Structures are given as structure tokens and as C-alpha cells.
Image: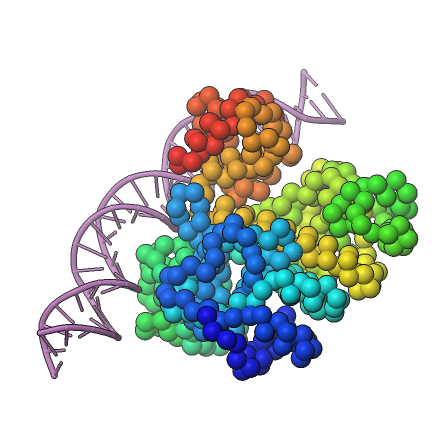
Length: 229
Length: 229
DNA sequence: CGTAAAATTGACCTCTATCAAGCTGGGTGG
DNA sequence: CCACCCAGCTTGATAGAGGTCAATTTTACG
């Protein structure tokens, strides 16, 4: 853990949650926050632990993991650089619903909930933005639920690829954010199945692949292909 | 659609969202609301439609359905009598993320979003409660995600049964809230699979069943059985 | 009752997980 | 500088869970 530098301001400002915060409040919040650096695989917090803070990824990546009693794990979400996570726990008894683990060496900003809540309480506008954020997460999860329950491995992978590329038309160059085995877990698949689906796409001439980067000459063709299974 | 009667007050008061609302505001909101009655299977709103209202189930049941391009459907949630739904859409461009359909003849109270938002804007305390509600839904969905991705049919059904009965120990008499085919969809299963799992439980002496009602002589035995698969 | 919808049961098949080898490529120490 | 090593990836063979299709049986309700 280290002291918090002023260069964090622009990063926080770019998040939907903090974009409209007045300077002084942001500063007060930063004063109570600290950087935490994790080694690959290290656990930031475990499911059901009492929540006292939420986080912003400064570098690296965080995996949010839901584990079953059988020991199986599903990556609910991969949090990228400059994204906030776990901010929603604030409003509920305050226990984390998932486990957070570092993917590669990762630094996060730990923001204490107490002061954050206090500030929110007094600024309806900020609360309003918080509501919008939670709403978005809700929609995200509903979408995930659909993907998992009614879509095949092919459809899920294609949806995921389409999410990763900004334009929905023409061709695209896509890069997996992390190693394929983690992408597989994110999609609710095994690494083997992901590998096979990618192989099928390659054989069908729909993609080219080298390591983590994927070329898609025709996004719409890819979509049509997935729809047919 | 009919005029709104005053006997709705106690029902609204029992919801977590409206429990703390001042009389006058609730009244103002009710004045703009109306009852809507739907026949079985009738659609209240479709996915992606622009949202102008949210709802409270007065009688019957509503299924929230996520459909895939293939035509397959998953029931995301079964909304019971006196529960609110779709209130979260308010804060997001305002499109419904799911389709809502009546399960049996169903009456809902349609509450317009515009006034609701206006009121919230001026009452930070109410907003705070709204946040708590969204947070709960978020946790619910995360749990669902885990169930779907890392649990077997047996485990999902048992979790669902345990959710339906208030006590976690000893014996219980459980009643499915709706027809089995809908329960199956809620669990992400086909009716056939649900039927088979129930048959297996019956043969293992873990449950007795007549129509929609289920007797569980030993809840913990049921849990152990599910854990072993 | 009689009919239609719901539920069950059986046979079969598909998808994905699992287990078990190989393969590959980037980093390390000799 | 190269050989080796090992994590990550791929590929193959196999099995199991759950879906699909079809044929009954049961239930609900006019």
C-alpha cells in the first residue's frame, strides 16, 4: 500500500460514477483511499466477507469469481484497467457476493465505503448517478443470464467477440484481454471447448488467430454463422 | 384498466420500496396509476420496448422472460402477488431488458415512471431505499448466474426448493408457485428434465409429490443428496 | 364426462466436460 | 547463444448430462 498521488484525479473523473463529483469531495475521498498491489492470483477479498471498501483497477486485471460448493468456479466478470467494481455492495448489509482475485500483477485503488456513503447521502445528484450505474450492472447481468442459459458455446463466444470490438460492421481486429483459459471461464466454458470453437471458426474461414489477437474479416458473416447453431 | 381504489395503500406500504413514502406522495403516485388485467399468456411489455411505467402484481403472476435469437426462452424471474417489477429501468435510457407475460389471469398496477422519478429526485431518503433494492436484485442475479453456470440440475432444483420453504431444517411442505413447465424454465431446464429429477428424488425417498405440492421429510438429507452430484 | 393442456416416460442424440497426450513459445540458466 | 522447461494451448478419445422427439398417462376444467 502507498500514499495516493494526485494523478489519480483524471482517472476517477473518467468513471461514470465520479465524473460529476465536485473537486473537494473527490479529494476528501482520495485522502482516505490507498493503493494496493497484488501478485498474480492473489485474493483481494472473498465471497461473503464484510465489505468495507470498493475498488478501482489502476493496472492489471481483476477477476470476479463465483464458486460452487463442488469447487467449480465461474468468472462472473473481468474488470479492466480504470474500471470500478464492488461499489454496489455499499447498499446491502455489505457483504461481497463474489471473490476478487488478481489476474497478473495488479494494482487497485481501495476506496473506503464509509465516507463514500456519507457523501452520497448528502448529494442527491450523485445518488442518481449511482442508481444509473447499478441499473447498468443489472442489465449486464440479465444479459449474461440469457447468454448462459439459452445460448450455445458458439453464440456466447461470438457475442463476446462482438462486445470486444467497437464497430458492429465490416472487419475487425480483436485482442483477448487475458489468457484464453480465463476467457473460457468468463464464458462458462472449459479451455478445451473454447479452443475447439475457435478452431471451428478458423476452419470455416471466419477468423484468423495468432496468440491472443483475432482477425475477423466479416463480422456479419460471423454473426450469421453463430445464429445458425 | 380501471380506476385505482384506496385499498391499494396497504399493499404498496408492504413493499420495501414504498414502505417509507409519505402519504401525500403515495397518493399522488396512485392517482396517476391504473390497474391492468391480462389474460393468461398475454404480454405486458416486450424486451427493448421504451419503458414508461413499472408494475406491481395485484393478483396472478408475471413471468419475466429473456429470449434468444433461436427462439428459446428462459424465465429470468417469476413475480408473485404484491411484488414490484421493472422499477429499475427508470434509470437507464428506459428500455425493458426482458419481456413480461401473464401466467394465468393477472392484474397489475401500472405506475408511471415520470412522476415517480420526479419525486425520487427530491427525496434522498427514498433514493437511498431504491439503491438498496437494486443492490438486492444485483445479488439475486449474481446468485442466479452461479446456479446456472456451475450447478447441476439436481443442485438447482434443491436450491430452489430450499428457497421456497422458510425453515431450513427438519421437514417441509412446499408448493410450486406455478405449473411445472414454468418452474423448469425458471431453473433453465426442460419440463422433461425437471420431471425426471423429481422422479429420481421420489425413488430415493427424499420427497413425496402430488400435483404441485411436495413433502420433504428431511430437508438436510435432500441437501446432502444434491451436494453429492 | 370429454377434451385439451400438462406431466410423465422412454429412446435416442447432441453438446460439452473430462481425461490424457502432445505441442508451442517465451523466459532462464548454463 | 542455445537447450531446456513449463505454463498455456491444442487435439483426440470417451463419457455423461441434459435436450429432443414421440408416445402415453394424468390432470384440470368446462
